[in-house]
Length: 94
Image (cartoon, rainbow, N blue to C red):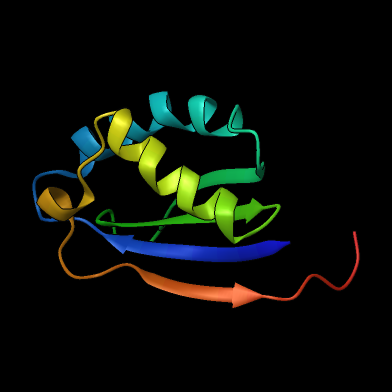
């Protein structure tokens, strides 16, 4: 299992566009064969900061997810203000 958070800061002025786009993308990601969790959150203190909680069955599923985002028209490079900050976790209990 691959469990991680992805913290993204978007460029000023793109917050609303990013939020609306990702609200439509989230249900599609949840349909991916190897996806186990995909939760989209927004910072309460900074409207440019978003966080995803993600869980996939393996690294191949993560790779498939990245490809699928591109197929869904998500171009993170064009909207992000810096690279995503990924933090990986070991699941202890459910």
